Image (tube, rainbow, N blue to C red; front, side, top):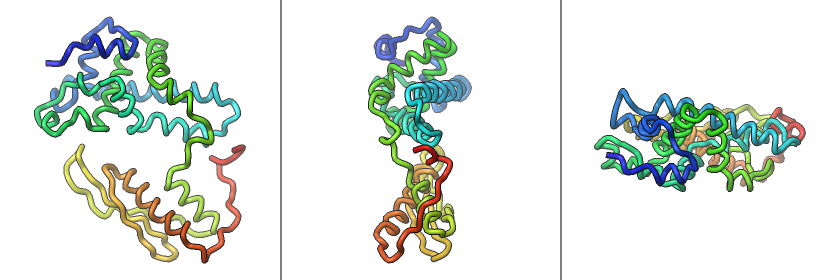
Length: 243
């Protein structure tokens, strides 16, 4: 049985007209394969991206496309969503199956992020676009107040690609080395290879993307430490125009 959600609604500054929507948003697939939050998550994800994109577009009217993209990515990524979910104690209200309960699923980053998006989807249906936007902007207020076009760094893969391009070297090759476990608890091991020198860097992560970023970070560190190669003038990319 789920705990009383009144406190959660106060944290969201939103009261549901249809409590069934909130119940569904808090129900993980492990608890009910047919009646769960996956479809609401899809809807909330789309609305979150739209609201954050519009806010950044209006607020930072001189930011380039690349800067806006990086700011949005830093705000809507799973790690940030999980942090927001923790701030409103969303994990306390989730309905999970026995296996997920035993393994601490209410603290798992991916489950928290998905559930937060599902709650946004439920608010969108229950109260409309403006009500959902108000909740999003309220939950992200502290982060929106501090983010700037220069405060968000490019990810490791982008940095590596641009560094290699600047040195007129070919782009790296990413290959899956191994995948362990079953979804959603898989771990990935990826190899990043600098194809002109055959140097390889292997790293792991809880998703393919995280493993790629970790491997790219290792390659970047090696290149940064390599003082024998002077970098050429870095060409301008689409993301860097007007930065």
